[in-house]
Length: 275
Image 1 (tube, helix red, strand yellow):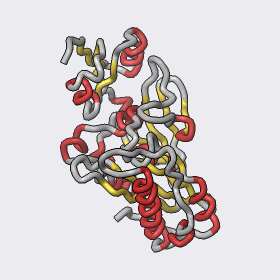
Image 2: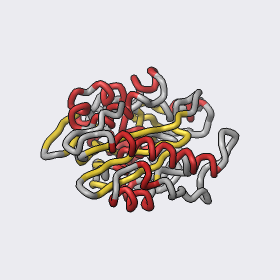
Image 3: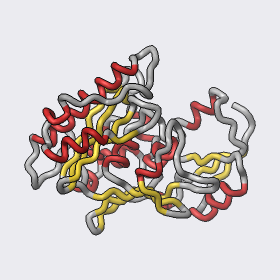
Image 4: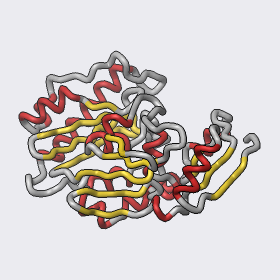
């Protein structure tokens, strides 16, 4: 690693001020992406601003039909939270499937969303559930937040404070994990609220995206058969040693059908357990 300054922020304001004062500074919460990236010299921040201990960035709460999770909340906390399991069980399930125990015990939901890795799990939940990303400066709708590979709407000096999830009638998540990393080769988060269905695909493309053809079909009939004759456009999908574009397009469709099968087998008045 190169030389950098480490500072531990004592408040949200202090962290924001430090971030604004140093153009090459990076926030440190779990560090599950940042530290390996620094080791590989792909990132060389001038300052690491530790925000893990800021109380304003922690906590899980439900109020007025919305689940709020602090940005520094760790994956394992989301996975084990009784509040999350009651409000959006599938979100707890998703968190339990992230990476490995070390990643789940150190990584944070805010860090995952801010990094916007194209194969990460949380972006699909945020996009499908129409979440609001609350920063130290504004509120950003999930539809506007994710802007492509490792790119978000976050501006200079801006940091995620909390994420607010509307509680859906039903939700389910399925992914085909890479056997080594646990990242999604393709994953699909499907949610239903009234007649509206939102389908968010992760892992298959350069960033999380909504599969709107599937949303339209599933809005008419929530059944796996509704997407049988649909295909994810493979043109701009990822292609590497692990799979072709067409392979990932098919995986995205298969994961969507599996997620919908969970929803179709759940009573209309209950929420999917994600199991």
